Image (cartoon, rainbow, N blue to C red; front, side, top):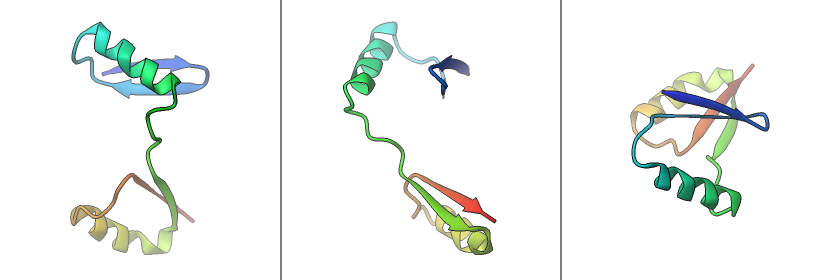
Length: 67
């Protein structure tokens, strides 16, 4: 796994594919053509509900559980 830090951003991933593909991906990101991962904040009290939703494959993006 590779981790790079650039302008307070961390990009994690596996090195797969040629450098040209990585450059194309970064160009798309700079052009704003890649949508951010959907994120949703939910109360910690609903943790079991979200575990069930994850197991059922119904969660798109990330769920952030907050106290």
